Image (cartoon, rainbow, N blue to C red; front, side, top):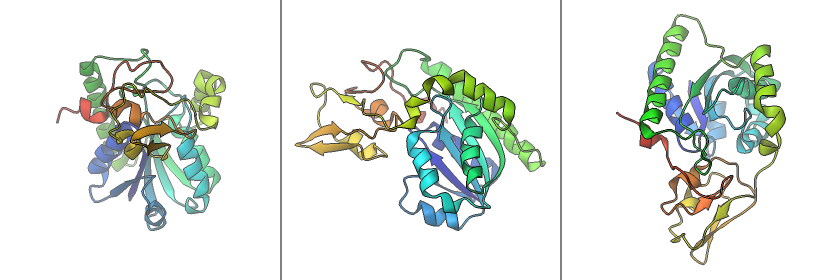
Length: 255
């Protein structure tokens, strides 16, 4: 068994790690930006795919990854974990349908509510204690799901027609443009920036480059919010005008 994840602030990475420890402790897991990811996929028949939903849709970087590696998915048995801050309808189903188009056999899906990572918008912001509780509830749901799977009952969150319609009419019809293309809206306040280079190092798209010891953003942001949540000077924004609350999964772990 192999675990694959796309994660901005660590929610999907942690969910996959916790899931695999319960289901198959020997399983390895890799980020989609791992340079050897294609080799890992080829060598495994069973895959657990974990990713963070954006507007009830698949992040652009992940869409491109799936399409670019379309020949790898044929006959693979894939279970999808979708993490989200709100109800997505068919988060797992969105990725499942894209993989199925390339011949994958989708075994099921699991939806997990996790702390919101959009650091520069006030909506959905919770006290750290509330976010820690969200993570605990997600852990409990994972534990129940794995227990069920071991008995042969595989969760089907987000799979099927009704979840598809819920996701479509809930968010996707109205925000489809948000994930159809990469964003060029990253803003870096150079008056706050100290040139540490952390954002450039962490960006999964290599969309931020250091020039003359200062970061410069390009037009291929996949909206993972990794840079915004980890900038030590809160100098980066995307959808909002200022950082409201930063946080990564490590902020909310209690063990």
